[in-house]
Amino acid sequence: MRPMESLTFEALKSLLKAPKKTVIVPHVNPDGDAIGSALGLQQYLTQKGHRATVVVPNDYPKFLKWIPGTSEVINFEKNTALAKKTLDAAELLFTLDFNALHRSGPMQNELEKNKALKIMIDHHQQPENYAAFKYSDTDMGSTAEMIYHFICKLGDKALINKAIGSALYTGIMTDSASFRFPKTTATTHRVVGELLELGVDHSNIHNLVYDANRHERIQLLGTALKNLCVLVPYNTAYITLSQAELEACNYQKGDTEGLVNYGLSVEKVDLAAIFIEKKSEGIVKISLRSKGGVDVNQFARNHYNGGGHKNAAGGKSLQSLKATVESFIALVAKYKTPKV
Image 1 (tube, one colour):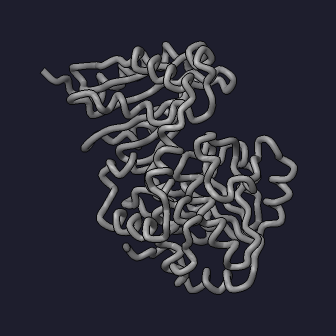
Image 2 (image 1 turned 180 degrees about the vertical axis):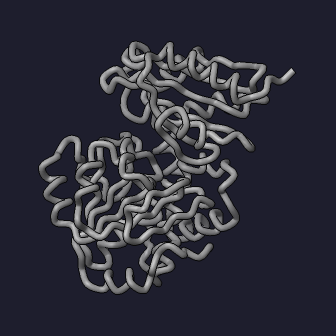
């Protein structure tokens, strides 16, 4: 494990000796890594005697709601008064799987004014400096793996049980695309091996996350694949989903998770995007994936008010779906040399 130079562990250990009111916040539209790391940390802190609560900015997919501890999660968007009361009482505030406060969506103002001591644990690039304690490592494949190392560094590896392990395994599995992404290291596999030794049922978790699909979600996949376009000269693929197409397939949160990877799976493609129309928010949601040296993090930061990792990032457009796609094609032509 790399040294965590930005986090003073002796000071943190001292803070954690006595029970604290602690709030854990993942990013808006929480995915498997955000929820898995948050619930894994929450259960660890609870074992240590802290009053630890997870407050999510908004809802997360049903296929993640089996994770131990999910029934106690407070949804800021749905239960704002209780969420604010919980935040106001916090002595420690963990922000997980994001490194800029705007990534907390509707909770941004609350986090900016919150007086609790802030602790950031995250693996994305270019972290902001809002946290008093920061564990930031862009070489890590998931925040869930970082939580595992974090607990071990605090000397509490023995407290990691099956429930915590199941939450962390979910985060590691989903953010590595089932261990396919380049940042899946030998250390990642050793961590996963130790979680399996705790009794974590990796096969069942995979089924719960990926295979328990509503038939409408499969229909949406079919629509997405029908809309797949390949810009052959630029080794680029993109998918569009309009609001009408989402509604026709009875869209639920999480249904579009992972669809962008189908574009990246096309032969010779090294840049893929998906554009999802969200009329209620007045935006087009954008997810970007790449291979090799194509840096979608910088691309998203430059053009889509977003960011993430070199090979996986996201953002948004305020233009129409049609205009967003046209702009993307023009940008690709500008950034990438045509292949002949």
